[in-house]
Length: 176
Image (cartoon, helix red, strand yellow):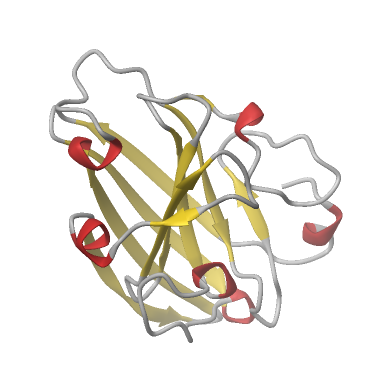
């Protein structure tokens, strides 16, 4: 949160809870953000989710640590999902693969100047190329952003020690 882009603005409050079962990694996000931080324009999977109010899960690939997955979900439930070794070399997941990620949204509501919304994301172990999450160590990070909101902002669960916001930095992933 210490990036210069976040200084002097009212930032969203985000709570995230991760749960691991043999079949799924589930992350529940609850978001309260000032109305100037909220944006909901993306209307398709594999769209520019980061431009909207978005929560993100980045995970190191457990079968190939040289690459990572990103799952970026808008407040409306549209998902961008890709894999690759870095920001420039990403391969978007197919629609069938995206459809295997269960997204359960809490409809946005307004309370004063706050927009409140939630999203639960269930990522199947099979999508990461494993049969089960049992005995698997997961490394990654969780993010919240909205690049094209009236008030853009960038939040991470674990510190990302860069001058400017950059979520595509697996060297800062920590164990879940």
